[in-house]
Image 1 (tube, helix red, strand yellow):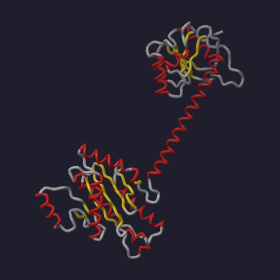
Image 2 (spheres, helix red, strand yellow):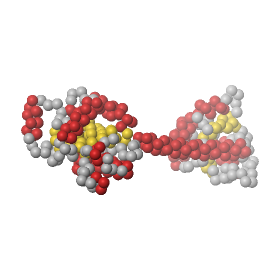
Image 3 (tube, rainbow, N blue to C red):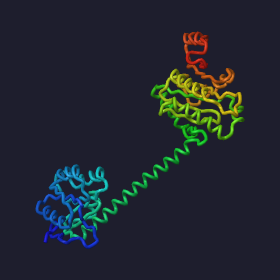
Image 4 (cartoon, one colour):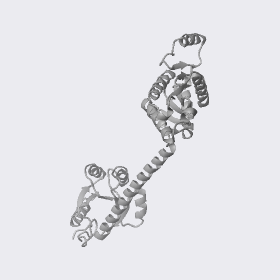
Length: 359
């Protein structure tokens, strides 16, 4: 009769209908060769597949090359300690139960050793076959429940993220809600000032919005925003933030973007939207937008509020020009720059597209 360790009876076969240790790959880690061999014989009689290691280094190699279902580790292994092996298993192997084997001695607290090592369970020698089978089944069940819990947590996280996205995006326009990003934008402006990189904003307004919207049904109005969302997202980058600023205005925040680059983006968006075919209910009315461009380059100590004010003033001038324009808010300039500004103002249509102007 083979003993598992010191006097542990492992010659007993699994009962009928009991899965026991059949085909289980058990990693045995024990510095005592005699005890290791006896344990391996006992596991074979339980129809398990033993994997043997005399120290922590051999155990680590087997963990990296084999795929054990259970680890039985003596509390006093050399090389990598039982604590280090347990940490490795929990970090990289996850679902494999780690059982600590201890000798029954006066003053030895098995539970304290389990807690200190982080093991899933502890067995005190001598260990009989029923104990080992029952513990293995229990630990496997716990591992299954942990995996199921992890799956449910991931699923719950995905659902929460979906709800967060739904709350962040206005369903009628497809744009992010401004109120949820205000603090983010303020922080981005502060970072741009602190680290001296440019940040620009585009403020886009539908021309003659009140007049145009009166001719549109709810479905057509949603389609108008969908077309605008498609035009905007086709031009901007992933790091840019398109927001519903007001019913007829779209705010686009462009981090790490200078004024001239933002003006090009605005001109491309305007070109795309003016090319859309308007709904038939608009009759002779044209679907177009005006876009104002402001940047942290506009002033020495820019704030989000000052940039919005500059952009709003530019949109009022856009109304005077009849709409369908891009107006770029100029930065503060020296006397020489002002002369250059006057020269550029005399150029027909500004520096960019034929409907781009500087204010």
